Amino acid sequence: MNNLLQSRNFPLSELIIARFNAGDDVLLSIKAVAEKHEVTAGMFSLIGALDRAEWGFYSPQKRTYLIKKWGSSFITGRAREILSCVGNVGQLDGKTVVHGHIVMKSLSDYVRGGHLLEGCRVFPTAELTLLKASGTLTRQQDDRFGLALLSLK
Image 1 (tube, rainbow, N blue to C red):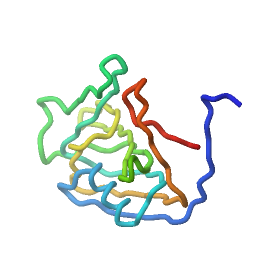
Image 2 (cartoon, helix red, strand yellow; image 1 turned 60 degrees about the horizontal axis):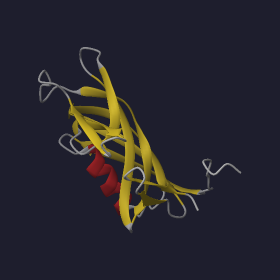
Image 3 (cartoon, rainbow, N blue to C red; image 1 turned 135 degrees about the vertical axis):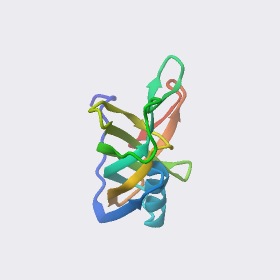
Image 4 (cartoon, rainbow, N blue to C red; image 1 turned 90 degrees about the horizontal axis):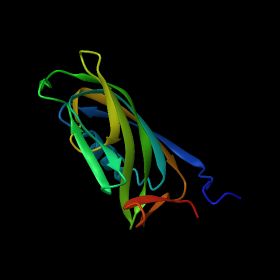
């Protein structure tokens, strides 16, 4: 078997639905819902809108995320549509980790996206669908890349 292709079965156990309110941080809210429902392995999808956004791109050369924000034309109180926000929930050293990507559309039809970071503020609402699985999805630090990668052993 190819060492690069790793997989593992996680039986689904629950469907969790949550609504976020204006002002909520998307990443922190997903993490709070996951912790409230004791999700140690899961996947999520989120739709809604934002009035602030922050996302990143991983730079292997710098071994860090390059952070992006909406430009100076970004006006607080004007919603930007979340076209897609998906990811997974797992554990790193016993703590909940949310790994997500987000794609957003501005009023001017500009589309932006990347790694979901703190700083994406809900306005006026967002809806989370979280699938909880049995077991624990773990991450381990990989020093080659400076990232906490999935461990599917």
